[in-house]
Image 1 (cartoon, chains in turn blue, orange):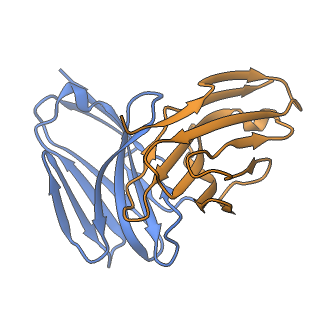
Image 2: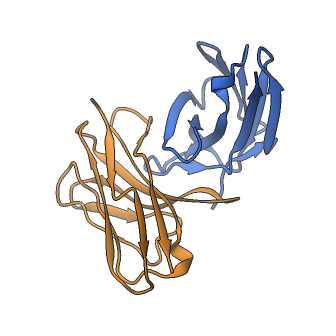
Image 3: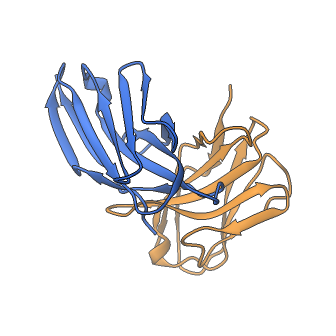
Length: 112
Length: 112
């Protein structure tokens, strides 16, 4: 079953702009992760935020988590053409540490 | 180099002809998983394994088998493939001390 639902489904921005992607989920979670996938290739882990954290940074990435709203956002600042990819949020449910449930993904296009 | 490898990368087969997709990781990870990715559906977990000889069903296990006889290998077996198993398949692994998953490059399977 799908746990995360990303929004928007597709996003097109100009290089240098910021990109904000949102994810909503349905059940209690242990943590939420964001992954990137370049066309047809394997996913790459970007960042993880635990249920007791509200914000986390990694380079140009900033992720927030609101457990009361069951939502997360990923912000990519100063975007580059190389950021063009699909982005997925994925959740580990509370008490089910072996499961990682993905959303359907967001397609980000960064125009040079 | 730390990596997850899958073979074959591309496979075209016919309905009912048994096939195996191999997955191997060189990071001594305990957890391994198989996912399928379909347009509009994101990634869905097929099976996962928490360690040697310990496997469990994911969200879409029907029509698939797995085994975990060695820590590094986690093959996916399709005993009697059908056209609805045409998909892009990913193997992933993670260590017991982390939730970050490492993905293989993917296997594109077509069943005619």
